[in-house]
Image (cartoon, rainbow, N blue to C red; front, side, top):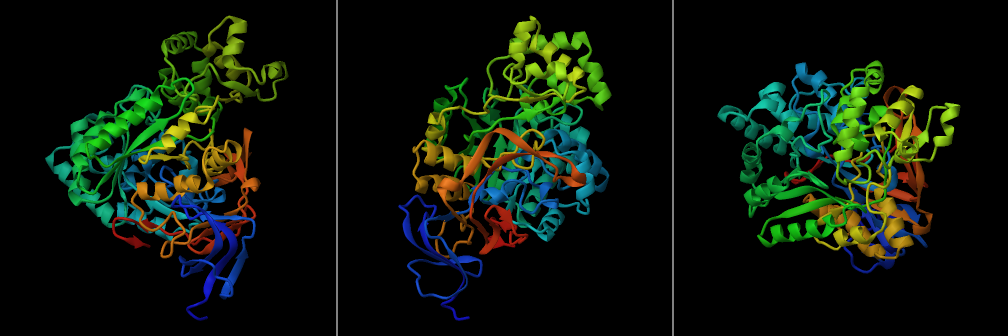
Length: 580
């Protein structure tokens, strides 16, 4: 085959290149996994030609906030993300992950991840070989896994601190001088091995749903901010990479630590990504406040961006997953800390617990749509016939009718259904598009983040790019198709300093979508229950998709919504300039 030939030629499509520039009709030629040429390529030969007449040809979606670290061991397409056009993910956000870890700490790490990210221990034990210790070992293991999309990863600080200090010390004191030096050494070792930077949660205890299996705070959430700054100095002195920090969710948290890290990194070449901006019908004041704060920081010359959750979504939970709907409440944490179902039943039958939890709820202020109990809708009563008239009603509605607390209703229904009660939250974000539009209009706000791989028994939001294309472009007509793909691809890629993905530009990696906007779908009624987890276990999956072709590094991975088993994904090393 001559150099004028292509491996793949996508012909006669409407090319939306991801830069935000006007789309045009033409062709895309792919060679060696990269975009070779774009424009009019009629008459050129190719090993495979895809006719895109009447279709949009666009870059694959890039998402900067996922937790597929474990899921990669059993699903190369990262659950619903790969089928919804996401071709690049960034793992190990918020300081949660699986390396480095000493062999004797593997069990403890699994317990942590079973609560902070709700990845069951049984999944971790059966699907993960736990044959690594250092972060470079972990990167080698991820490299060896078949991947249907591209993967970048942070070095998560929680396992790092435990590796150096031990779990008890990491939770109760700051690193001493020798430990800090070792932390810095390991950060550089990890970034040499391909980590794009470091990640952490610094939310404190109040209002933080990310807790250890025993209900206590994770190390970085309880750590003194001065120590966090000193840890991050290793990245700043290195002069490259990303520091990702979760320091505020809605009204909870303290983003002054974000400010301190952005000040520390100013002018160094290191980017700080703040999490998380949210939209909310109850807290509309947050959006202008968030944007004013971001503008103030950037006006000081600080390289700061913010991740924002703006898509439509909700949470569905049973009693065992209640922390996803209200993990900031002490009452919920007590339920989550129960060792087994019998202990949960005993707690829910304790009138003192019910009264204390009800009093806590009475004092709660507005939070995000999913973070509460009053608005939870009853969607399953475990087949108990006398309870079926309650389906479709909220806990608050039933509580008002019975003249009891919401907690009393929750406990009663949970016990009468033998813990099979299922609830659906209201929307986790604003129901109108205006707040999302405000975030998208800002150059340094990156919209979309599936949280994919975590909380799989409560939601599945790998569909978020599909939703935003449907909602903002097709239904509302508020964003052009060109701008929406910029938001979902190049803007996100550049936020994590990826230089050569997210656009259909010659020399960029060929992560490509071919689809008809009218074919995209998203069913907001309920999540599907699918049994595709380790040992046949179940998860919730968003009902979304509709892409004709999904191409990763020049190879088709999905056709007409069905994966073909191909795994051309790469581990992307941004800081070292290597695509492994």
